[in-house]
Amino acid sequence: MSSSHKWHFYLTPHEAWEAMYKDCEQAANSIDIEQYILENDAVGQRFVELLIEKAASGVKIFVICDRFGSATFYHSPLIKKLRHHGGRFYFYNIITHWDFFRPWRWFPRTHIKALLVDSRIAYTGGVCFAERMRNWRDTQIRITGPVVAQIRDAFDRAELIIRHKRSPRLLKKPDREDEFIYLQSNPIVSWPLIYTELVRAIGGAKRYVYITTPFFAPNRRFRRLLISAPAKGVTVMLLVPEHSDVRLADWVFLSYAGKFLDAGVRIFRYQKSVIHSKTVVIDDAWATIGSTNMDVLSFFRNRESNLMTTNAEAIEELKQHFLEDLKQSHELTRDQIAKESFLKIGIGYLARSMKSFI
Image 1 (cartoon, rainbow, N blue to C red):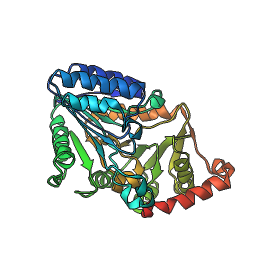
Image 2 (image 1 turned 30 degrees about the horizontal axis):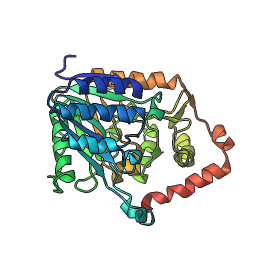
Image 3 (image 1 turned 120 degrees about the vertical axis):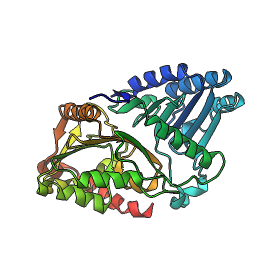
Image 4 (image 1 turned 30 degrees about the vertical axis):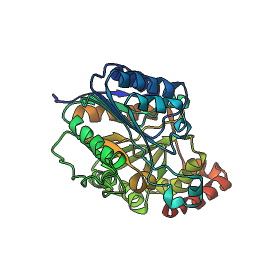
């Protein structure tokens, strides 16, 4: 199947970093970045040093990093140096120590992981910039073609918010005739576009739904949607990490798992490393990759971005990634849940009540 888009998937952060670095080295006009985690380590410093070099050569640099996720970089002298050379570097939703006692101020966060080079080459997915994530299983896509114009538009809207303190126009609903569409959810100015598309696509599934997510704590409607699917003859497979980098999130997941197993949802826990991919593949007809976890924070509280596609070749690639990952996974059973610590599951149930609080 011919396509006006060209893409490549990267399945580990270190592979994605090298590809992004090389494209940024070649940038002639502009580099735009929005990122949740930029760590003040060898990986983050190497990348920002390149941005400084490009800014000094006249390339326009625009960066948004989350104040919480990128906290270690907040006082880095590299930021001042980048700004000195004309680079624009902003932190999203700066919170103070006093805000620890005001949880309603903790959100929204920007959880987006997007890079745009010369308004021509785009990357998005789950990859952050942190040495500790080097060998995780993640998914990042490099893409060129018409959809990049949508990503350019998204960065322009972000700059209106961050730089000019202006509210952008509301995001338009996607044109589902396009083989690739790029959606952002911004809880301040728009409805939950990505969540809405996920619900629509899963609700229309006829044969299968394959979900990979590092964190699983969805709202009731989404849980019911998945639980009801097996009764309609739809195979639902959920792939999560054996251990994520947030232990509490693992316990929250365990508190949900029993009901899903009882409904016929098959759950697999990835063993090889932390799996940080956020992908959904449905019926060989639709797929998405991006920053959105299957939890209420991603659905309703954070800035998120996802690339969605009906391109058969891209869908097949993502499907094969999922099936290969299953080979590195163990299927969860009711007996295994019974062997888990009662305290872990109890804490998981308790933590679930926090979702509506924050």
